[in-house]
Image 1 (tube, rainbow, N blue to C red):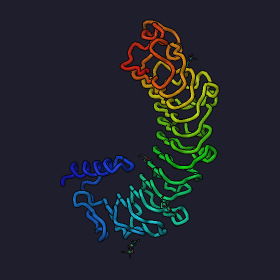
Image 2: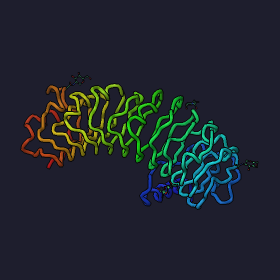
Image 3: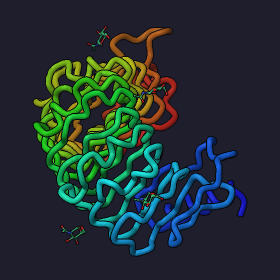
Image 4: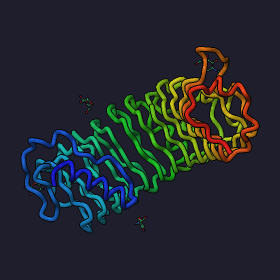
Length: 339
Ligand SMILES: *[C@@H]1O[C@H](CO)[C@@H](O)[C@H](O)[C@H]1NC(C)=O
Ligand SMILES: *[C@@H]1O[C@H](CO)[C@@H](O)[C@H](O)[C@H]1NC(C)=O
Ligand SMILES: *[C@@H]1O[C@H](CO)[C@@H](O)[C@H](O)[C@H]1NC(C)=O
Ligand SMILES: *[C@@H]1O[C@H](CO)[C@@H](O)[C@H](O)[C@H]1NC(C)=O
């Protein structure tokens, strides 16, 4: 199989099995890497010799990892511990993928990860963690700890390059989240969906562009909360407990916002958004009225909403509630879904 076909094949099996999907595409730097030895039970593709695949081998511990390996895949095993010396011969490891194992925090020893000074990706999705892992190396860019039982987060202080953090499907409350992310300068993507937050966490870095908080129990939004995130583009708060009384007037009037998902809440009126918003999901709320002012402060030749997709189905609004001047405001809308 050539490389492209192999990557596609991998994407297909991961996708088709309905498991957690991620972009495990091959990095460019693999060409020209020297060919190391491979652990006998694992597979190091000839055209991708710096990667070692040890997926689905019923491994109970990390196998011998020879020097030269930079991308290590250990998915779908029964690994329940990591010794401090497990990666002693590959301190330049860049990707470490440990999804679908049985790891607990108490069985990951000492500075296992912080010694890996080149580590960029660390994925420990679908394990038995109750806390985040650490200490972590300052080189880390992408941390994924989804589908664990995490209630506590350590500090991510000093992880200057940490850009992408996925913590969905854990048991985090807002207090646990509030302190953890302070000081991160590069964080752009944060997924905290499917957790147990009743409030929005404080102290999230203002660099965030994508923030997923859906499927929590959030009932109110502090005034101006989202104003601090001056580049925020994608915000999901669906499947929470938001009602009108918990949403101050300008909560979502954020000019950088492109997509806002407030579906499956208890809103009776449409929160005001900025004219720049393009996708607005409000299905399955308790909306009773449609006010053009929610989308356009004033109407005029140059003043209109950039809205492309608007979902209002599963509410009490019907076609007859829609005011005639709506189309003047929502003049570039491609579809408006309504009961
Ligand atoms: C590291 O390499 C040394 C020398 O080849 C070897 O004895 C040791 O078992 C290796 N350690 C691991 C954890 O693979
Ligand atoms: C680890 O998680 C699996 C699956 O969620 C569960 O069956 C098992 O009991 C857990 N083991 C421990 C030691 O918590
Ligand atoms: C952070 O990323 C930059 C750009 O890729 C790199 O030059 C720098 O060494 C990284 N910092 C750390 C601590 O790894
Ligand atoms: C939305 O915010 C802008 C400033 O970013 C402000 O000029 C505008 O009046 C606000 N919209 C509403 C409806 O208050």
